Image (cartoon, rainbow, N blue to C red; front, top):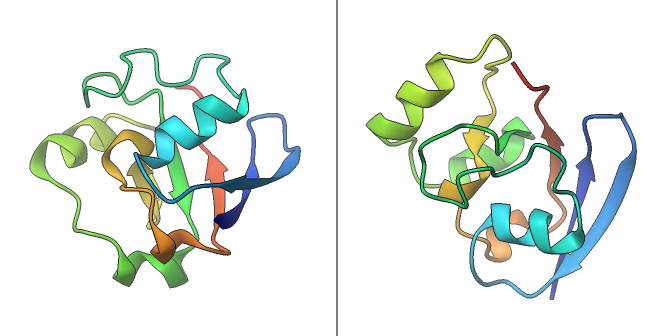
Length: 105
């Protein structure tokens, strides 16, 4: 089991406990935060699962792919920790991470 802290688009903080499998997007969606989130279902085609991950955890993650980077480039809210949650495997590297759902563009 892993736990991460998620701040939603309304600024509310959630402690999410989940099994380390699937993607970060699936864990957030399964938790119940679905309002305008992950509209493409995890196919890296819409950027509605844009999250900002605490920069301390970034070296533990795989690099941003060209497709993911292209979608993030279209966001007015891109930050150093920006990722598409559908492209982040959910594993022990995210245990205790703080993640913020980016505003909708």
